[in-house]
Length: 615
Ligand SMILES: Nc1ncnc2c1ncn2[C@@H]1O[C@H](COP(=O)(O)OP(=O)(O)OP(=O)(O)O)[C@@H](O)[C@H]1O
Image (cartoon, rainbow, N blue to C red):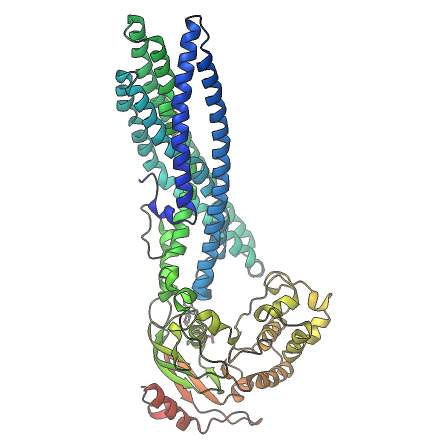
C-alpha cells in the first residue's frame, strides 16, 4: 500500500497543487513551532508573575497567522480540487470521444456516467483532506523534532521512537480496509450502470413482464451497497479509535517523564511547557491522515478506473476486482489500436498527415483484416471502389458490412493491411479532417435531446434554416416536421423520443443531405424503416446527392441494391463481387462488374477467383 499513487501526479493540475500544498505544509509546521515557543514563554512568565509582552504579541500574531493560513489552505484546496476534477472530466470525455463508438458500445453507459460524475467527485476527500494532511504529517513532526532537538533531546528521542507507531497501525488497518472500500465503489458503479440500463430498457422489461423482477435486483444491489458502506464505516471508526489510542499513549509517554523531570528540577518550566505543547502537535497530522485515508479510498478506486479509460496500457492497481479488469479487457480488445496512450490516437499524431483532396474519393482495401475481440470479422479483404462509384454492400446479418463502414469512419483500425483513400493510408490521415468529408447515416441514428433544427444541423452547424428545410425535404422529413408542435424548433426527447423510428431515420438522412461538401457517402441501411413510397423518394434524393461522390451503401432491400453500380457481398470474413440482379428501373450496372472488379483487383494486388471469390 503506497500512501500516494504516483499515477495520480499525472492528473491535470495535480503536480502544481502538490507543490503548493508542500509549501503550505512547511509554513504550517513553522507556525506550529512558533506558536508553541511563544505560548510556552508567555505561560512560564505568567506562572512567575510576569507579563512577557513580546511573547504575548508573538502569540497573538502567530495565532492570527495560523487562522489565516488555515482559511487560505482551505480555499487553495477547494479551488485546486475543482480544477483537477474539471480537467479529469474533460480528459475522460476526450478519451471516450477519441476511442469512438466501437469502444463506447462495449461500456455500460451508467458505469461511465457514475465514474465521470460521482467517481470524480469522490476525489474531493483525497485532494482537500488526505493529501494536505499527509504533507503535514511529514512537515510538522520534522519541525517539532528539530525544535526539541535544541530544547529537550530526551523528549525528542521518545517522539522519534513512538511516531512510526501511527503510520504502522494506519497501514495495517489500511491494508485491511482497502479492498472493502474498493468493493464499495464497484458496487456503487455497478448499481449506477444497472439502473441506467434498466431504465432505458423499461419498455422491453414491461413487455416481457420482467420489470418487477428488475426492481428486486436493484433493491438487492442497493442493499449490498448499504452493507458495504456500513462495513467500511465500522472499520473507519474502529481505526480512528486505534489511532487515537496510539497517539494518546505516545503523548503520555512523552508527558509523564517530562513532568517527573520538572519535579526533579532536571528540566525548566518553559522547556517542559514547550514539550507538552509540541508533543500532541507532532502526532496530530499523522493521526488525521490515517483517519482521512478511509474517506479518500473511494476517490482512489474511481481514479484507478479513470486511468483504465485514459491509459488502458497501465497495469491495474493491486486488489482490483473483476469489474475493473473487465473494463480494461474491453478497452484493450474492442478497439485494438486505440488502446494506446491518447497521443497515439486520431488527430494528435495525424496533424502532419495529408488529407485527400476534396471531390469523389478512391477507396482501396488492401488485405485488410479487422475485428473486435477474438477472431477477426474481416480476413485479408481486398477491394477497390473507384471515385464516383456507388457500391452496395450486401451479405448475411453479422457478416461485417457495418464493420467495413466503421473502418472507413476511423472507429476501428485494421489489425492488418491498409486502407488507402486517394492513395493515402487512412492510418496516417488526420481523422478530424477526413470525417468532415463523410456523410454518414448509421444503422441506428442517434438523435439528441435538442431541437429538430439542431439535430439536422449536427454536421453543418452554420447551415441556414432554408438549407435545413431543403435537406429535410430531400430526406422526406419536411412533411412530418411541419406537423410537429413547434416545427423545426420542436425539442425532441432523449434519443429522439416522440418520433417513430422511420421519422428518426429520415432526420438522420437529412443530416447527411446537409453535408453538401461530403465526398464519400456511407449509408448503413438508410431505408430500412421506411415505407416503399418514402423509400423511392429518399433513394431518388440519395441519387442526386451521390452525383460526383463515392458512395458505399449497406443494403438489404432490393430497391437500394438495384441503384448501385456494383455489389460487393460480405460473408465468411471475405468480400466478393456479386453480379447485380437486373433492375427494372435501370439502376444496376452489374454485368460489367467482373471485368471492372478485375481491374480493381489488379490495382489492389489481388487475385479474383472463379465465381468472383477473392482468393
Ligand atoms: N462493438 C463490437 N464489439 C464486438 N463485436 C462486434 C462489435 N460490433 C460488431 N461486432 C461483431 O462483428 C460482427 C460483424 O458485425 P457488423 O455489425 O459489421 O455486421 P453486419 O454485416 O453489419 O450485420 P447486420 O446486417 O446485422 O447489420 C458481428 O459478429 C458482431 O457480433
